[in-house]
Length: 112
Length: 112
Image 1: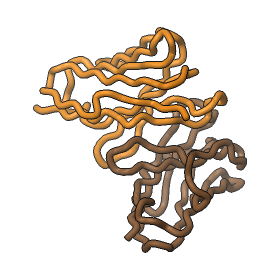
Image 2: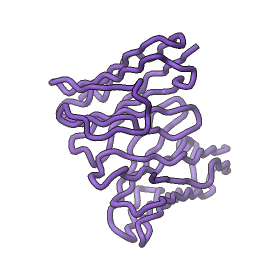
Image 3: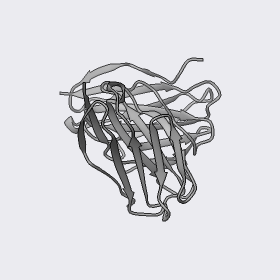
């Protein structure tokens, strides 16, 4: 079975621009979570979606938004990019919401 | 808000030496998870501990959950170069346990 997939792998954007990151969970997994990982730090929780409903939101500004589609794939959108948004964005899926999370390879976002 | 701390931040060991990382939460946890992230990779789930005082072993890795369910440890016996990476603990952000707060991680280097 394929693992969690994310696209794109790398992305370079300019301050003020908008970005959309995509995630496809493992087949059968209904929960998708998004994390931001700045170099040298642990992943920081951004959003969780389960069965297409938002189940959790971390301490991130309203510039960050997400949604989950009927096929359980998900998008993370970030508006008005800042230099500080440069990070590895990780998507994780699981089938019960509270057990082990399977992480994708991440999208490396660089804001210049 | 809930905080999860880990010590040490870095650990350099000679191959064959033991290694221990400690995780402490500001609040009582319903469970705790451990992940390993290789350099340039993504977090990979290692284990989940649920019960007070629980001890679990995976080959050379021993995981403990404290009696008060506020701390945990990971001990690696006779480290190998394949153990190189950053080890994160993660605890649930809320009572539903569906999204997690990660610690800052302990970065392990193993010298051959």
